Length: 183
Image (cartoon, rainbow, N blue to C red; front, top):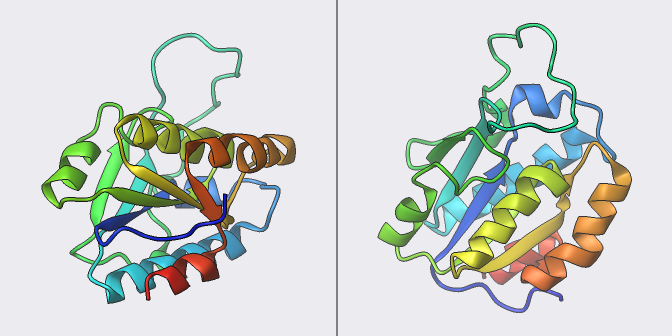
């Protein structure tokens, strides 16, 4: 569903736009995703709306079929990309699972600010972004995804999330459309 409105208390959540993730091969150029996310962050800050910068520093416990990464990641792997122009007013969330809500204080941070809606962008569409969108919807937030500001390492997984999952969780639209809705 095309985005129709943004609540007056909307927050932007940028998922895993960190050096180690942005450096992975993705279905769409990561530089373009970062550029659009940075434009969203600038627009939200200009309207005095919260910007949440999420980064992942580990993995959830439990078995899965994915091979464990070999070696030690570079020291700056979890550093947020500088293009986001992190501000002191930004909320930084460090997570250990796919989604940004579980095991973090994100819900409390948003509720303290009276947030009723979230706009999401980031990498990877079908992992961190989708998990965060699902949890946001389950927590009662209105969800909007900037579909041209997300990408995945798997083009089919990206397409499935954008075409099938996100429209069932809320609204979707482009970066420019979301910025225009900010007024």
